[in-house]
Each structure stands twice: as structure tokens, then as C-alpha cells.
Length: 171
Image (cartoon, rainbow, N blue to C red; front, side):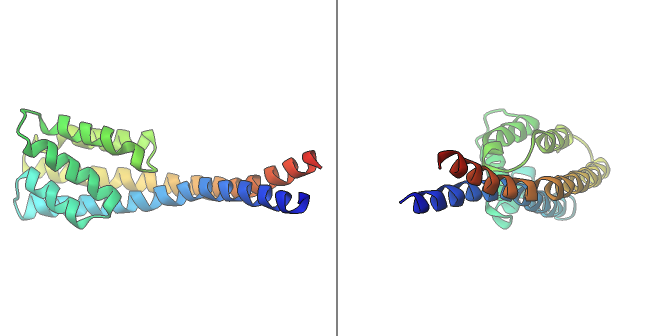
């Protein structure tokens, strides 16, 4: 019985370590998905000349479900015609969807800054805004990869080591 309980404890704490490490990988993937979604949004707005609500809806439908939900939520807020500005709808959608992602507060701050100029300027300045968000997302992605390389292995190892320590203390 002690042996099986020990194995269960080690397995459980190792699994927790792997879950924590997976958040780093998930963040990198979500930043890549955001990058692709912004490319779609740029195409919808600047080249297809769709209105912002329609562009948000189309990007939401084409994007990864977690990231797509953010764009769909922005579309829903804008289409309700409650007098909400684009920036307010953008920020509300960020707030509503933040907990469903692995994005950090720094990532959300980058997205918030993008939303301040979204739809508020001419096409030339919108293009500059898109170029800036691409640079910011690349920077965040590199930082996320560095963090993953630094911490993911440690989380996995610590999970197993904590389990072994608990077993030793209980025996």
C-alpha cells in the first residue's frame, strides 16, 4: 500500500510540474496565433476594406478558437451598437478573454496599446500600427521562448523532486 501511495504522490506532483511547464509552451503558441490573426485583420481592414466589426467577425472565425473568441467577442460588443467605442470594445474583450489564455500582463498591455489606435486613423497609420504590433509580438514571443527554455525544465524537475521529498518525509 505504501508503495502504491508513493508512486501516486510522485506521479501527481510530476504531472503538476508538466502542467506548469505546458503553460510556457501554450503562451508561445498563442502569441504565434495572435500574430497570424493580426495578419488576417490587416488584410480584412486595409486590403479588403471591410468595416471593423465585419473584419473582427471574419478573423474570429478563421483564427484558433481561443484567440478567435477574443475577436468574436469584440465583434459582438461592436455589433450591439451600444455607443461603445472601438477601444472600449477591444479592452472589454481583452478583459473578458484574458483568463482563458496563457498570456501575461505584458502581452495584454501590448494588445491594449494596439487597441488605442485601432480604427482611429487613416490606412497609412493603421499600417504603421500593424507593423508595430508585429514587432511587439515578435519581441514577446522571443521573451516567452527564453522564459520557456529557462523555466519549463525546472518545473518538470521540481514536480518530481517535490513528490520524492514528500514520499521520503512520509516514510
